[in-house]
Image (cartoon, rainbow, N blue to C red; front, side, top):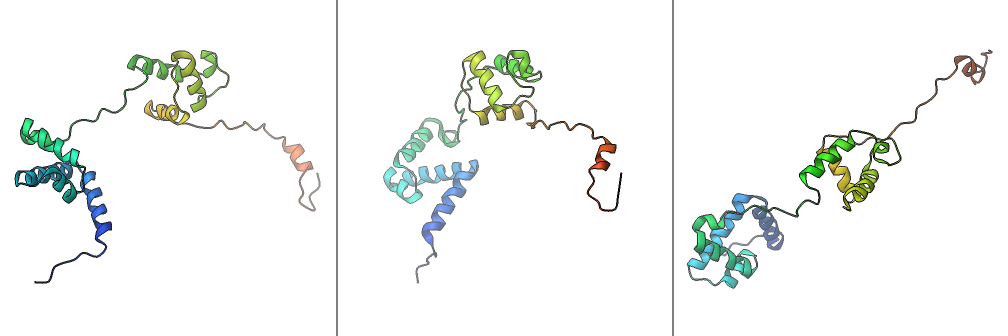
Length: 170
């Protein structure tokens, strides 16, 4: 029998690995297959080469499976980096944003990312980036907007004197 081949296999492997990583269920199935291959006698480095993962990852999967069974292969929560501001501080920030920057000793009439950044550094000693401060606006349900200059109402009589339309005289 003639062996089957896949055109552009290297690119296809990368695409399939991305698809596996995209879904939580797929990652579980992927780990399950890794443990199955180890149970069938392959070593962790062999399984890692077959599945495209680090040998250490396969070792973790096997260890978690031995400790907790199938539940050990389910992906746990990823808490991420802890917030720099407490819940009480975030509530105060939201309250302050409902007023003008001048109420807390800053110049300007509208809040923006830079103004919030300065206030947070003064108030709490916390340095956040401008983009992160702008994300806080959205988190609190605010929308960022630029102030528009107010135009003075024009005098219709003076406008007529400056018209450039030929044949029309004031």
